[in-house]
Image 1: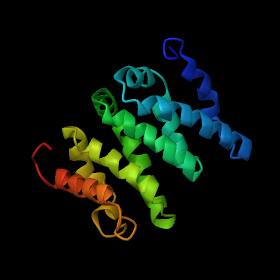
Image 2: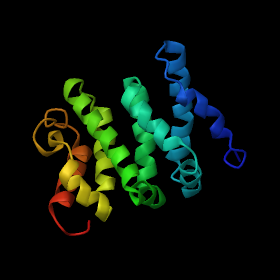
Image 3: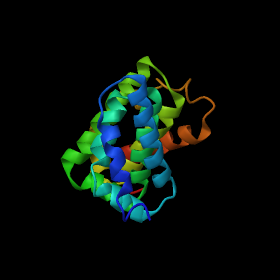
Length: 181
């Protein structure tokens, strides 16, 4: 099995590169695709392995500095990690980890107001929704959730996306009520 051999770790140098040239972007995107394929299978063993590596900081940096496609895949990876109970616990266990993730998500929301991407918005909303399912994170999101998610900024972008609209409504409900979702 590729996890026991730690084969995904050989991709990390490609994720760590900051060069924006096309060949490096292709390498970064291909490496993200391999990690994305691993998390797609919804296997806790995969998530636990990735949590034991530096995948979260690598993805966060790509989410801020990569191409739109790299940002989307990196956000998908973070989303899949968050959807695993161990991943959510890991991100929310230490305030600095939560704030690192929420700050990058907020920065991406700001970027989306200038350069909209429905696909990226969908993954970001899903990340926020999952974070809102943790009591400590939910409390923090009451203060730091971007206004663009609270107002009608993205209503046109979400017009035809029923699932993302539902997730956003649930997120807003979660952070405005004391009930545990």
